[in-house]
Amino acid sequence: MYKEVESKLPFHPKLDPEVSPITHSSPLEILSKILIIAPFFLWGTAMVAMKGTIPHTTPMFMAGIRLVPAGVLVLAVAALWRRPILPKGIKTWLWIAFFALVDGAMFQGFLAQGLVRTGAGLGSVMIDSQPLAVALLSAWLFGEIIGIWGVAGLLLGVVGISLIGIPDEWIFSLLQGNIKLTSAANFGHLFDSGEWWMLMAALSMAVGTVTMRQVAKFADPVAATGWHMILGGLPLWAISWATESQQWVNIDGYGWMALAYSTVFGSAIAYGIFFYFAAFGNLTSLSSLTFLTPVFALIFGHLLLSETLSPLQTFGVFLTLGSIYLIQQRAELGAKFPIFPPSRKATGDSPAGETDPI
Image (cartoon, rainbow, N blue to C red; front, side, top):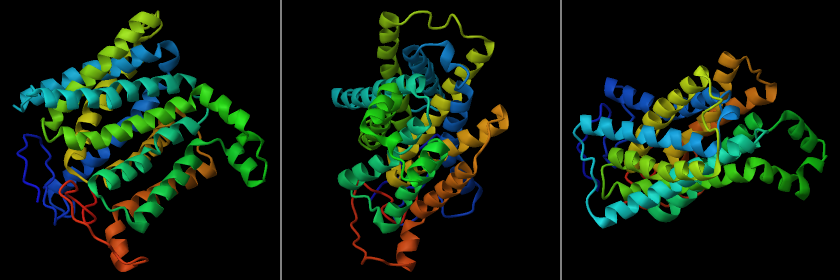
């Protein structure tokens, strides 16, 4: 049984294991639905904003600028809401330090290296496929039930974001039996070019997502998010100082505006909301919404940068939305269309279980 956690936030999912936090239509529940989608909208639009800035800066500096100022902002907001911002005890700091290492330094560092090296959309497919790793880790560590419909949704989501990110000519070549693009040599070249960094970033964020559940047992989740950004960003700045040069010389006014948007909205607000829900909600369901990130990036890239959507990409968007529906509604679909006999297992670490979509 989970106890209610007092919250000063304007949103607060009710942690009743028998009642979904977003199954009602009250204004608070509608606000919760919007806020649950918000991180993925902000991450997608931040990707669009950063496209023109990445060539004019350096990866480690960019990673640090997205973490340290954002962490300070998160802690300031937590203090304004009178939340306990100073963790207590060595064990608490050790958990936050590990959280900062995997989700701060490693994730943002790998992501930054991948962004400057990745020319094809395969990199974005790799990083946005991290819900698969989260689902497996959550089932193993917390006993969260994925179910056959959840597995189908996860796989459909990977297909959807693959159609969005992988170049059309690659897909058509594979369908025609031309496997030259997928030879071992070509894949080795791709990984050297950035996709390997994106894969490591995806795995780092997956570990960080499941780690938040443990961190929240010892520290306020909002404050922990802020500290992990600061502690994870400082080593990246140190690496930037030691190995990079002219980090900000070539950044113009638009570039600083893009960095500011990515830091405030794409990091501080997005991560604050995401990890708050990750601390108490169903990780598989929440993480599955990551599939929306490339969808938002594609849509706003089309609207703001006049990027065109191919028929395959459009189809991929619909597949991705369908995958999220399957994952969010896996309990209801399993009850209506049982494929395998249900095997329910209630655990103390999975407040939502199979009945809670978030």
